[in-house]
View 1 (cartoon, rainbow, N blue to C red):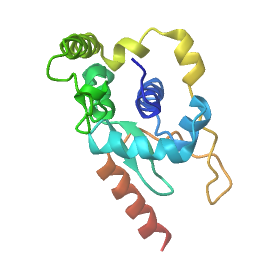
View 2: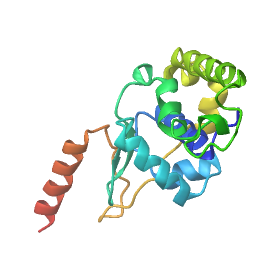
View 3: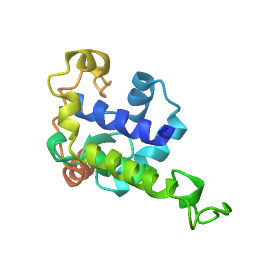
Length: 178
């Protein structure tokens, strides 16, 4: 079985966000760390957001964060989101033209193998992939560069906020600067 690039990027994105859970990360940070195209990554991020795996906030103070704890993110579910619409073999496709489909027993064997594949992934959580994995943490840990403030000083570390809290903070900053 060969995974799509989208599935691969989805898992890398989730691992990057899990390793850097204490900060809001940017798409460009993930793209650089994972050697990925920002455009392709943007499509993956959109789908991850639609399925409530990550919270993606746009704008100057935006970025990405996991919406759930890594222990609550099932890898099998992530794979299904990105792989479900792709038939594993022609006999599972709507456009199937194989004349053997009605009598071929290989179809059942393939279906059973795919079900076993997903059943195996259903036992894996994102936390299983990142917690205690020092090598992964060393590769994906991101040290956010200081962002310039209006006074030219380094700002304090940004605490992890919900989307609503970030929106309220931005609105408050806009009011204070008006």
